[in-house]
Length: 218
Image 1 (cartoon, rainbow, N blue to C red):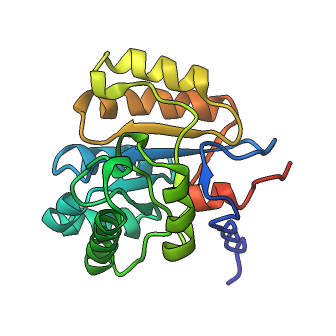
Image 2: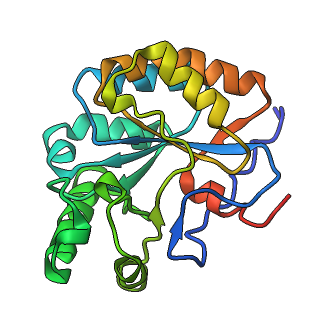
């Protein structure tokens, strides 16, 4: 009994740059990223929304939450999403010593591996606060490119679901990286309409490392 062949997985890459805020591609792909979780109620509701639409995202998790909710971490991975390193304490890396930054990234890496069995391949600095020299040695020593973003709807200010949606939809272009937080209920409320509108425009959602693999293509 044959049937259609299984679709080939998209290639992944951590690229050759210290940092990415978007990827240079004309292909119709974007990355949806969620910071600061997992959250015990909001993240599972978000995962349901993404699963219904077969959309893959990248979750930049804080290690304290990863350790607190290991079953949600395992679900994120089981459903084909990607996990990224967002430190342990969500502090300002630009103001930390090198040893302090190493401790943050190492402990978060270990917490992610302990809960999921999968190592993170990228990192995002809390508040986007990081220096160029930190980006360089983090990539050299950890193999992580620093992932910033091209669209920030400032959902942490809780402007309302419709505003979050309109900012994401108007800002999204091929190769873009969209930043939101899965710790706010209003952000999750915004996701069905956001995703449906972007899919309706012909955009497709991929993980960050899948998007990086498209850099310079299309």
